[in-house]
Amino acid sequence: MTYESRSEATAAPAATENPAALSRRAYGRVAVLLDPVAEKAAGATEPEAPAQSTIPIIEALDALGYEPEVLPLQADVPHEWIERLRSGEFRVAFNLCESVRGSPAAEHLAAAAVELLDLPMTGACSATLLHCLNKDRVAAVLRAHGFAVPDWKLVRRDDPVPTDWDRFPAIVKPAAQDGSNGIHANSVARSPSELADAVERLREKWGSLVIQQFVEGREINLAIVGNQLLPPAEIDFSDLPDDVPPIVSFTAKWVSGSPEDLGTRPICPAPLPAEQAEELQRLAARVWTLMEGSGYGRVDVRLSADGTPYIIDVNPNADLSRDAGLARQAWVAGWSYEELIGKIVEEALARHDGSSSASTGWFILPAVRGVGGST
Ligand SMILES: Nc1ncnc2c1ncn2[C@@H]1O[C@H](COP(=O)(O)OP(=O)(O)O)[C@@H](O)[C@H]1O
Ligand SMILES: [Mg+2]
Image 1 (cartoon, rainbow, N blue to C red):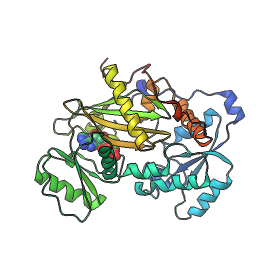
Image 2 (cartoon, rainbow, N blue to C red):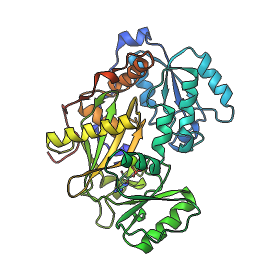
Image 3 (cartoon, protein in one colour):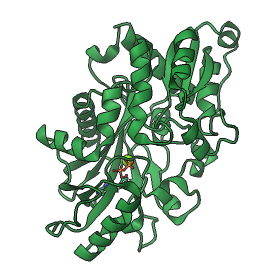
Image 4 (cartoon, rainbow, N blue to C red):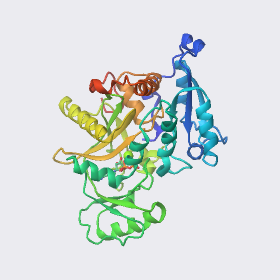
């Protein structure tokens, strides 16, 4: 399910030009905040340029009548970056920094700078970004509040490999990464020796890890924009090779055309009974509220054999690429890509001026069209 893998037939429609908006530029200047190290890793060729996957967001802002200006985070001279942000007469910051200097652990710092300047900002606040990155702490808070999370254990870099873990299969993940970093077929362990191998291998590169009970059931993505709950999506693992575990691994996410990519097919709306879909959407809303989520994000669950939805991942500021899951779910709800980007900006402005829709309760959006699936 890499971004490139989405076919023309299922892609969100291209920008529809709005001549009135184009001529007016009435909606003000938007600071598009990027981490240049991440953009380069995602294929940007020029030092200050956005990666290919970021360009449609800038184009959408432009098509909507905003005046986007890219502000790559200058981590070596942060005061200069903050000064550009302060003095640029921006109406809103569109925060696309998922890392600082390529490190997701510092992602919240960019948001914190915008908060200090008291500028409207898309997406989640710095505290939510910081909290949700840490899989150990998220699981602990969710469990303390009665949500179902798979059993887990934190293993710090210098801890001995645990010998008391007995819930197999298990999955080993970096404790503070996202984007499926470090998640490969051999991250899933079926025995103590496979577990020891995975822990030794992964902590070399990623430091602290979590070992988590592996939930074998269906994987459902629940996306939120403002107070709107988008139609759930499902990852169909049925075309994966038999020797590959059913996970959205790093290869599945980023290596276009790989068997892992082709074998993790998104279906939206998820083929679930309406009542169950709504229950899951409301579950995601409760998780989001607990994490003080705002703006947009995604909660991923896996359904165990008895139907219990286990929370796997909470993603504030989920990937907004045109071909990524959130845009797909928005499209299934009837929104064009430009509408999605527009709603995200409007929500940021409303939140900042205190007229946020958050207080008016949740809206469950029906699917008006579909992506993937056999019918
Ligand atoms: N406990 C688990 N049980 C089953 N699958 C899991 C579990 N944890 C992770 N996965 C699989 O690995 C993928 C990536 O894990 P995730 O925790 O979402 O990491 P990231 O934050 O990097 O996205 C998930 O989408 C899912 O397919
Ligand atoms: Mg995830």
